[in-house]
Length: 237
Length: 237
DNA sequence: TAAATGTTAATTGTTGACAAAACATAATTG
DNA sequence: CAATTATGTTTTGTCAACAATTAACATTTA
Image (cartoon, rainbow over all chains, first blue to last red; front, side, top):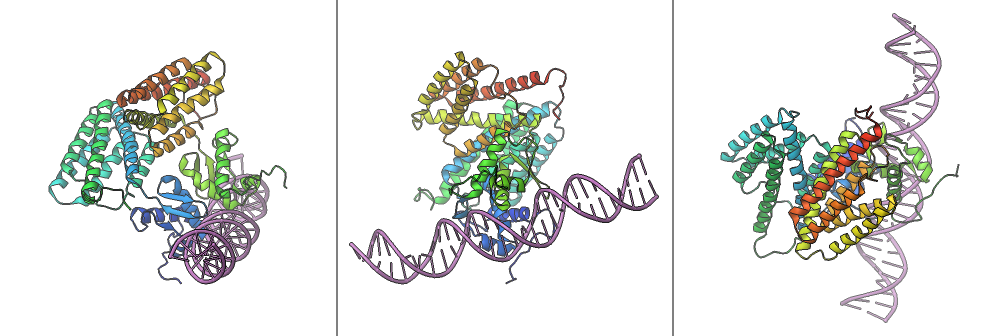
């Protein structure tokens, strides 16, 4: 059996690392659904590597929150509950607000010299997006905006944790998600954050960032509710 | 060669999980120093398991921040720089403050009914500790205090991240650490946090918690500086 | 029928062996 | 003598095979 075997890895780094990336991608892209079991043998056949290598990759993914592991029973794509969405938003908000405050401080101290320019550029593009109908572009710009700020915080650890949180949140069902309802409002909030960072005001940046995540959560939850309809108010599944 | 072979694991869970715990312990206890290489074969011989199992355990530890992995070169105990201590404190402060605010909210909403009692009990014990000379006990009480609050936040993800951060911070050299200089001041701050949580005031709890971590960092850095002497003011290594 | 038990198949856990890369060291060359 | 190239050793990467456990199913029993 050789068909349908994607032989990834043309001799770069280690196989296990590439397998990890591939599994990661499968999960984020939804090829592996939440709750689904990761069959080691099956994955090893699909990717054309040994089972041990797949095991290694799976183990290395556990702590990212994407996978749940049960002894002797196997690995499963983590299913995110509504309660967890709340919790993830809380942590995400805390880190993002801290990061924006740090970025503002660094701008004030003259360490970050290009950040504000980048943010404003991103904002300009976003405003243009608003008039057009290009949700995918807005989505990318939105991610880039948050990335810049976390990067500007000069705190790689914070960025790593933040990225993991966002990815884990994406596991919550598979809706339109993040193609957030109120783009205009979201842009306003980005402007507030940018302004605070630009004038090197950590407290204001913290406040604006925190508000952004909090209202973002509210918008998202409302969207979920609307999608579920007023009838099924219970938890999924 | 059979001597000095600790055969852990009298058939509980899986071997790799126990090996992981053991490696974790070795690192936290300082048996494996920061920067030291983790030799797979050596560890497998010490613990009496196969190399593959050790590999699995090591891979599962990478994302905790305790271990750095380099392709074809091996795994090393992560060396924490002074800059990283700053960053870790920032993230830790953000999460702890958020957690305390959440705990206060839950107390206010009547979800957490035993937390305040526990905190006050901890405080009482701590005050007694102050007069005696028992740094180890204070250390444990201090950890327990923080644990209670994170637990009371009802956010397991936040607690996991927090715990990892604290552990990673412990990798910074190996000094007296956390047997913090000013115990009296620390207790005052704990009292402020407890009071805010007790009256269900999230904002005040956030502020008190944030202050506690911030001043804690300042105290710690001052201690480091003093230990290094005024001569070597540069970054370590 | 439903619960409990026994049997078989599928999957995970663990190991030892071999291949490939990195490392240490000696020999070589300019 | 310094730099570089060979060479052997150590260590990591990958694999395939075997053992242990779980899951699925058939059978028995109440």
